[in-house]
Length: 342
Image (tube, rainbow, N blue to C red; front, side, top):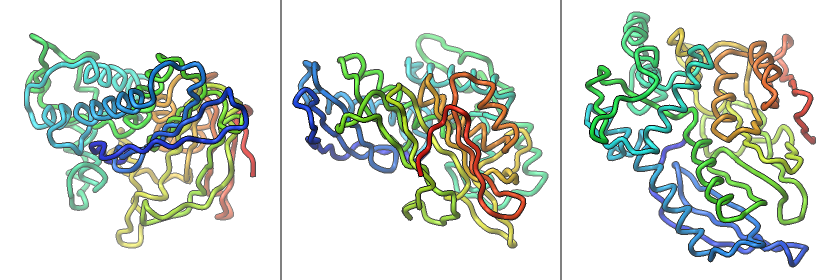
């Protein structure tokens, strides 16, 4: 997840359409360390554009001040610092979702393993290269296995001291979760055709040209800078159905030490960065963008064979995996329902 930051500006763009019955607009602004884009068809929607813009702005601001690990004044940051914080619905819901994902994944997704990411230099703090003993100590002191299924709440507040001051980190699902919140609002005002892009994507219906939405899939080539544009491996075709699409990979966030690459995907069950041959996982979920976000990370934790099985065993998922083949060249695998165009 990119950093969550306050919304600084919002731009409204009218998108031209072939049909007069299709009234598309595009709203853009700053969110989560980058820009967000929301495209929608306002045909039949009675809510003024300015109200929609302000509502999206307010929802993203609420997410930032509640769930951001980079905003030092957010509820999450204050909770991680040991402060008693209000048990808001958003704060409790994110914990509920993350705990259920931890259970489903058998610990491959662990939202209380933040100290491990910090230790390897991929979290909220600067760090040095951890020793094996440091990794063992961290595995014994963090993780959702030490936490209950629900946060304890008293008088509308929750106290981290009751749980031994667990530190939570929602990077693996926060952007997808944010897309779902915005999409839920758009559905509530009658929007049917939409694309919500906050680093991860939720889309439904048709684009301004009257065709299903399409999304580019990056070629997973090592890039030291996240600002460097990626070459495209292909174009995913949505088919017009509601779904989230997320790509996770190890080609943007990594560092080299003593000639070895250390990627940002940490296996929370071992405490170490993954070393398998899976380069990127693109996952489509008909359930939610948060589901796509989590499943893509899950794939990157477990590697190629388990990722294939995860996707094929779940009827709500489709996937596209790019990996290093035996001869050192990039190879790909797509589930039967994943449509990609070269």
